[in-house]
Amino acid sequence: MSIFSVENDSTGNQVSSLAEKIVYVMRAYATSYELIYGTPLNLARPHNEMMMVKENFGQTRGKGFHHYVLSPEDSDACSPERLYAVGCKIAELIRHFDGYYQVLMAVHRDSAHVHAHFITNNIDYTDGHRLVLDIRRLVSLKQRISEILVQEGISPIRTNSFGKNNRIESAINVINNSDTN
Image (cartoon, rainbow, N blue to C red; front, side):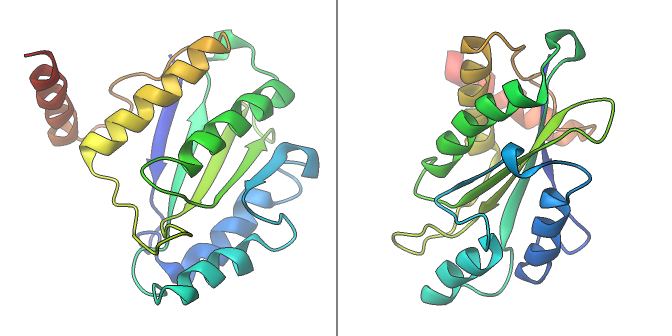
């Protein structure tokens, strides 16, 4: 099963750490320009463009972005190029998930396990609303990403890949059970 995780830095993904996170995701020894995708972003200045949206809507404080990591199952034998193609589809899905958001995606190949990072501006570029990623929305996002992965012949996301927090896993089980009743 693939793993899709939500990452938080030591600041809680505050606006102040957005530039540092973008540099981390785009660093040359982890990826290459051919494995980086932005929607709708100019790859030469993603931080400036994300900040412009925040400034236009007076949203320059607090949580500044969402950071996701997708790690396909080792048995999927996913090359960086294949993960890039699938990652572009996922970036477009995230872009239009409950609004319109800027997304930067980069495939990292600097470790034994190829994986993709997604940095999403949490401010809708059309109306300035914040993307609040509660459990229900996260479950929905993961299900839709799993559909893309399966269509592309890659293992779906593990349903309990939120980490070791039993309260979160219990909440997911409650949500899933209430949807079936």
